[in-house]
Image 1 (tube, rainbow, N blue to C red):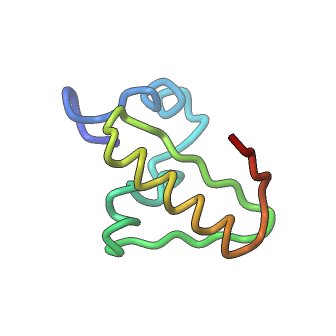
Image 2 (image 1 turned 30 degrees about the vertical axis):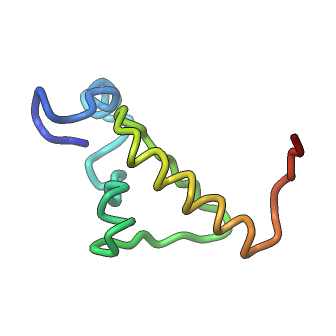
Length: 81
């Protein structure tokens, strides 16, 4: 995500340049989380953001992780067909 052009997602370049966030704010990439090569620490008051870089397989993997977590925790709203 923070890789140099043309690989990285440059939506974070301006907030980084402005000092609003640092590279320490980026805990892991979604592929690392799915592969189990990285983990993130979370607390009840923390906020985790997923920045999609347009890779459909990663978007599906992220959606599946969120869905499974919601089912496991019995949270969310079921929207029928």
